[in-house]
Image (cartoon, rainbow, N blue to C red; front, top):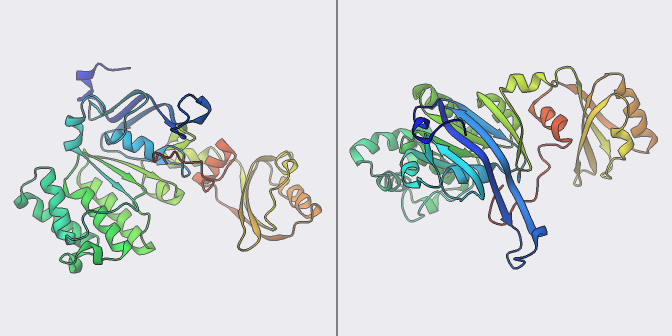
Length: 350
């Protein structure tokens, strides 16, 4: 596995997985039905350096949340091993939990009858942190997330967005060595999400030996924040590099975004056109249109595609050329858009 265990604590890797695997049984009543299994993680090897802001980008159901829950000791792997700061997350749970924290977007933030400040104080006490040490952190985080005016308000009286801010603040008050952020901006308005991303960058700049593992299905968030990004699809890591390097892999292609009438699936012949590297669609039933994102090895292939679209009785409603993004990398690797979800396991392995 590359290292012996007592060498891992001095390794450059803050997070490491070796052939990590997790299988869910979708129908627990069908104990003998092998066809009812879902592989959420498929022998994943991952190495995250200490001090890195590492992103896992993929659609809902790709396996991102399953990965974080295993690393956070909340889920047992079906196979392989995972290490956080040199400790085996399954065999040395008691060594891992004091040095990590986790924030999941959209989850409940604590006890509704307690105020925002009381909730944050409670979580620091669970970590055994004296209030004289925890209080400055709690007060700072309440100010960072814009809750200083609401700190004495019961959480059950706060809006959904404000409760999510309490949840985000909780992750930093324990001053973890490794922080897991699972879709942290889910449920936040645009302004709050921007402030959240700004603070994440600031926190790592102030703590260069700490590590953040971020999962998201927002390509712009991964592009803006992460030192490196792993693209995950159906439990597999299909690519891993810096955002710039990943986008460079599609720089030679022309990326087009088209809006066409109707919601019928496009025929396979569109994808087989010469010069079409990959084509992904997303239907919009409310507006009765389909959004098509296509990568072309030859810009001239765009004209042939448009002719095919109109010959099939569809109307072209919009067309523009775009700069390649991480979504285009995902489309090139998988043939699908990031917004196309995989079925999530019933045990919660998105």
